[in-house]
Image (cartoon, rainbow, N blue to C red):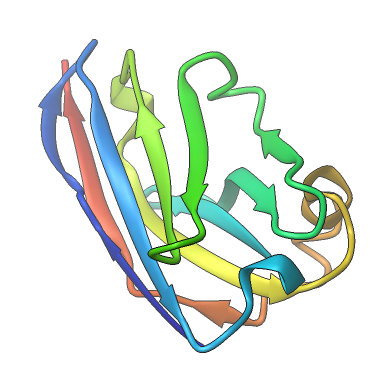
Length: 129
């Protein structure tokens, strides 16, 4: 399993970015893929997740209504569209994958106790005020 995240950068508050996660080595329909982020001095936070099993999605309250996760099964790429960015969104963003038959919400509920198995390298998002 390999995950390659890209798309980070510097953006002004209110702007948008789209992160991409190119996946390989596994079947999309057997895995949940999620985006996590970690800001300096803070714990890692689960941001969004999509379940390959049932197509359900999960969003953290902090990003609900601003971030949208989608997937392209043909290219095995997962996207995180981030709109109305805030300085508080500044963090290193990671994509992760885990083989599961659970819904996105169910899998993210236990993400801290049971970390995802596979992780890509991070991509830095910096939002200036």
